[in-house]
Length: 77
Image 1 (cartoon, rainbow, N blue to C red):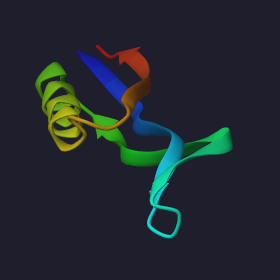
Image 2: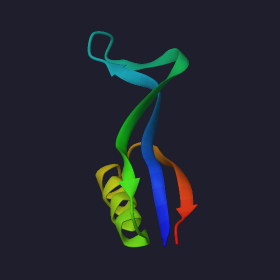
Image 3: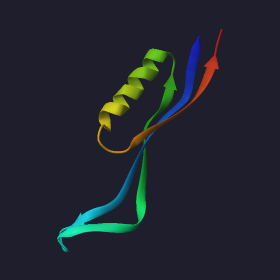
Image 4: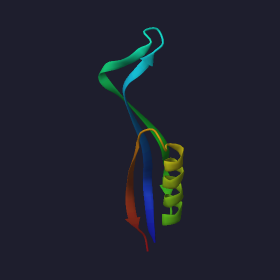
């Protein structure tokens, strides 16, 4: 049986500017702000559980950022 250990799903958001109410215009940052947030950090025991975790993470962050998945795969007999 294949198990997926140390599954970590991270959402990365990059912001290059924001709207300033005080200046009434879009203000760019000197350097882009990168925000990383860990969404899922557990073990998955089969492919269905891994699929449901990735699908849930994708549905949560539809419009902002990109997802990164890291894991260790083991084959157990």
